[in-house]
Image (cartoon, rainbow, N blue to C red; front, side, top):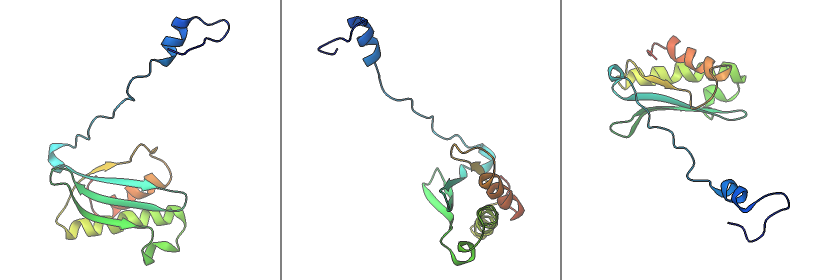
Length: 127
């Protein structure tokens, strides 16, 4: 409780305001069984995209792609996202992965996220 109260507010109103508690926690990801706990999370920035193919059970990264690679660096953002998806799918197939769960990381399925997911599908990975 605060030491002083502002005019028009009782001490109980201040107590209710101060009751914060812990922030809500997101549940752990639950990939479908047929994908064997593999997911493809994407991270976006103003001019970048990075993505990985992660095995959640083993805790290993199976494949990764970043905008800093020479083949992606000079492309427009939407084209870069699509090419990154194709490149990740190609690397996933080399690692023996045929399907995964697409983790959009809280981003709306629109623009670069959508282009990235479609690039993964065009590359032959089932998401």
